[in-house]
Length: 411
Length: 155
Ligand SMILES: Cc1ncc(COP(=O)(O)O)c(C=O)c1O
Image (cartoon, each protein chain N blue to C red):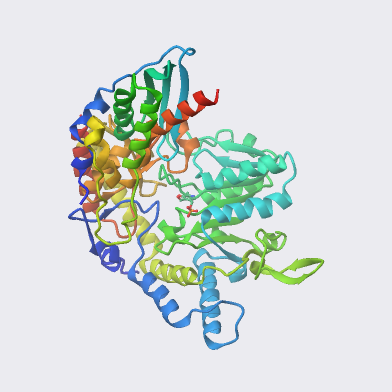
């Protein structure tokens, strides 16, 4: 049993102690980035105040401490996602986007031949689309899309055809626009049955429920620290050791080599091969603290809380606006996370968000870096509200009050 | 502090609800130029009729937020019939109006509002600079107009 209490989490997050425009902060943009608790900020402060030195180089005490901090974070990540091969499978990157570029440029460019197929879905973030298109340009691979149905879920009716001859299925754990969660274990089985590997965009799913690459049979996983209560500037790329060992380096420079001569270089073994240059050490420390913090809350408890907030919000939005505010996403909360993409009748999402700001409500207007999906539903943009472990029903109160104001102002 | 009323002035809401110079012009003689704001999906198409060194007529289509649409509507009213030199000057004045100064690092500092007396109705958009994310919205039509004039002078 955990003793998870959303209001206690809120008290732990310094930013909730400020007001915006004379109102309490109703932060409903956790799908963009989460707000870090004090434990994360303090861990990073402590690191800079007492331990900072470059890693894997000096032999003096603080250099040893910094290296231990950095490698400790790697071990924590491995445990958090249940990496079967441990810390030696966890590569630190800048963010999810860089992790996908690493996947495409290292694994993709070395393993895929012209004509090979990578399957993504219509609900992917651009981070899991553009690197494949780039590879299509440079290597002549084929990119296929699994469509999204009118129920806002993957339409798997032709999936066998789409996966025919595929080398990789690359899919998000949870849509950052629709809130739809995908059944990763089932998709992994599908991919493997067709002889393909499966890569998962965990940017949204990792922060809002438990992740277990071994249980689900996943081959590659990418996620970002800043969407799971951690700092910006650090992300994770995970893959099984056997796959990792076959991947060539992505960025070249210091730290990633075993040897450099005047006639060439030999890359380092293991994860070091993918970490060129001085890594984000303080950010790794912050991520480690965030993982500890999330584990203390209990991923399942957080997921249940966010599901209940979502159920309540869906019901109250319908009750208050009866169709004038449309939610672009599943109307029920099974296999659905706390993301509410809103289409407000007669009011552009930018204006919705601007009026909400006056109520202290932070939402994100735009296409959410998922233009194929927006196009699928004939929308240029939505105003997206999303929950985090610190969200409370009173944030929904503020959202509804602000939406009523927006409808009124532009009527 | 920046207030919603600074942004959604009555003139802006009026131009949003009842945009001026909507529609198309036959091309040629008019030239057509498109602008996009990739951040929020705003889009605009301008039809410019240039004759005798003047912007003889302007019409526009597109969709977007109230700020981008009202700015486009106000722009059309401000530049229609003007000489190209005057239009260029108006674009430059508007650009200056939408420029953020380096005050953010000084906690609590407010951007100084420029002198807007010469701007007429366009002054209603002066408050946008207090909402820096929205500057792109307000600039869309103007940047598109500038692009259209550049293309015309390159021909
Ligand atoms: C599903 C998904 N994938 C990828 C990303 C990209 O994350 P980052 O910007 O941290 O690289 C995001 C963040 O917006 C996301 O929601």
